[in-house]
Length: 484
Ligand code: GLN
Image 1 (cartoon, rainbow, N blue to C red):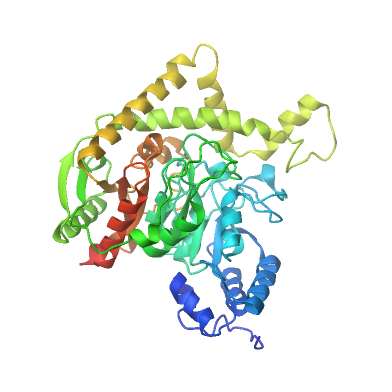
Image 2: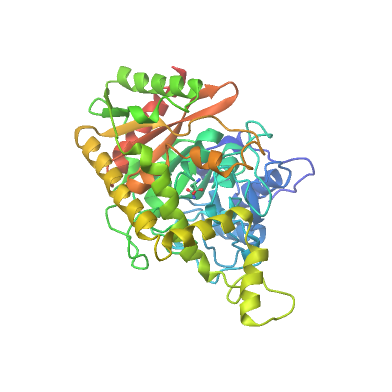
């Protein structure tokens, strides 16, 4: 490898905006993987974004040297990737954005990590996130907020804000996030990148630190739809270690075509209007008209139980969280007290010191919703509403192939603007949580700007029909998106 000079981040023009194909060509034409990985770390180490909690520099450089020696093979040979810190990585600290897991190094890889490694991807580090994925802004992270590359005073969205900011800010061409109620799509929208939440069951959750298991999926981020499809090809598929995993995978990259002439779009009226920023509404309508000009057709429809989504989502998510987070007891992983106390005091002090305010709030509310006397009134009722919402989607998607809505009601807000008002933050999830309740797939694609801030358009599909969702997004992007 050539001698690296100070102040010289990379000698490859455009390295930090390259997609997977560009990088592959770079390696095929004799450029070294090790040098590319070095340049990537140089860039991250000088960054103001705080997109990463942990960098895995030594391991990444060692893998790069091996690939340089043996050839960068596999679908992702030599490609750097950022991994949300809720996904377990063997030998690399995994904190889930929490003090309680500081110093925890998993002894095993999540299923998706095994798949990435088989295809030659290089994990460069663990990305910042809201503590235990509870949030919409990446401000609840114990490791400080991540900044939006488009405006450093603004949030990148959340909870996978570090992954989206890394991809938008040139620190990784691709990344993984997890989406329980919008955590891939919200930051994709705020940071102007592409992010997909797959159908529930398509991607194994083995090794994903659970927040609300019945709602969440791991999903890919990239700068274009093609790279998201390729990453989905790598991570999707049956895994015997996740009992909700199902073998419904198809070849997503091959499904991309510049053709939407058979696509019937449904536009649910409940997702526009009240609370939705005017610029966002205009941009998404322009997006729908662009697809119409390309040969798709659209009709306005209604998803009539939408107004109950936020209430049902937050009851179910908090209930599941209160049970999942019981395992962080200070005995098995992460934070320890300086002096041993009796079991009861250790148990409560660890939680008092280790969890942040938002996590504690959700454990308390979830425990309340599940308690005797209130279980039927809250949790069971929320489950019934969930079924109605799922049926709304199934019946709407009988006559249409995709539904299109704004991803977020507004563009990225300022750091500190909403963090003191939890309800205002919960309301921001109004267009993303119904999709998790229904379990259907959904993508956020960049769709114009409000001033200098990106806007995201959400394309929702039938269960396991990622192929149509991705194809519609691809045609939209290739047709010039909202800028036509
Ligand atoms: N903002 C939502 C919540 O706080 C969604 C988070 C997520 O998808 N992980 O629950």
